[in-house]
Amino acid sequence: MPVLGENAVFAAVVVECAAEQGAFWPFHDRFMAGDETLFTERGLNRQATFEGLDVDRFWACIENGETFPIVSASYEEGGQRGVQSTPTVFVNDQQIDPTLEAIQSAVESALDTTP
Image 1 (cartoon, helix red, strand yellow):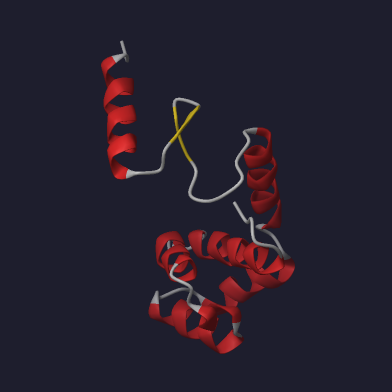
Image 2 (cartoon, rainbow, N blue to C red):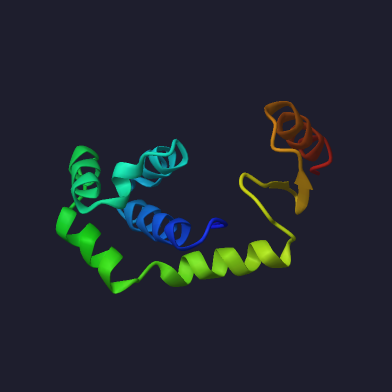
């Protein structure tokens, strides 16, 4: 969920475009680590090439905004659920603390109640 303005929306669009070619997590992780080079054409080209993406297809996706509706819908859903920051974690539609311990406990509890 992009919560930090225009740059966050751009990053979310880029990540969704990368996801179309199976590279969601590498791009996500680089943005979340604060890699500012991904806000440059050169940095995006380098990362896309490194991940083995079809760079032309990747740029076409970014430039035509085809993933913006996905980002927008995610943002809207987050707002409806009361999300105000990332990460925000839900298990069975219940918001939980985004710590490993809390996630593990919630998942185990959910599994225990599954028929």
